[in-house]
Length: 169
Image (cartoon, rainbow, N blue to C red; front, side, top):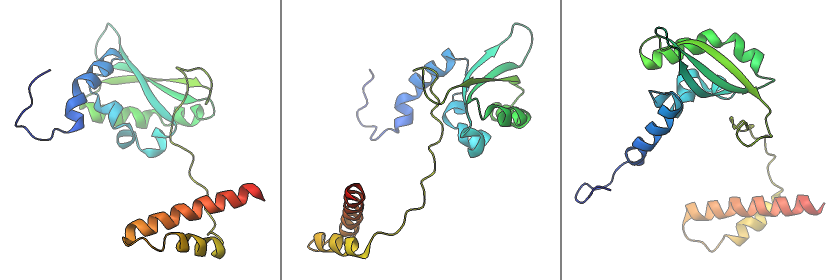
């Protein structure tokens, strides 16, 4: 490890850059930006359906094959959007680095390596808590002087009291 005295704070990305590059290059990603900024490159909707797994390059000429991992239900939708994905990925590289895209399907849960970890399901609209619970939470956090901390404690108390009431009834 190198001596770092006198340089001050170093961004976490700078500390991990070599390790991220090594992992990315082992899977064929010459530009790790494709992995780290996938939602910005292809868009949030496509990133919620698929993740890049590998880029493999053939022996003849330019253009590799990008392999995407998705669930079986999302594969037909993703298949229709492959030209758009290819265009955006090549724009990230700055040249026609990807000539083909293959889609690999997996189950949403199951085998350790094949699990899909896409965007979480959006939260359902929460109903406002009962006024009695809100009053109890405000009473419990009433002695706290800092208004930000008091508001956070009130919100926490409302959630705990609502959950305990829903579990009882």
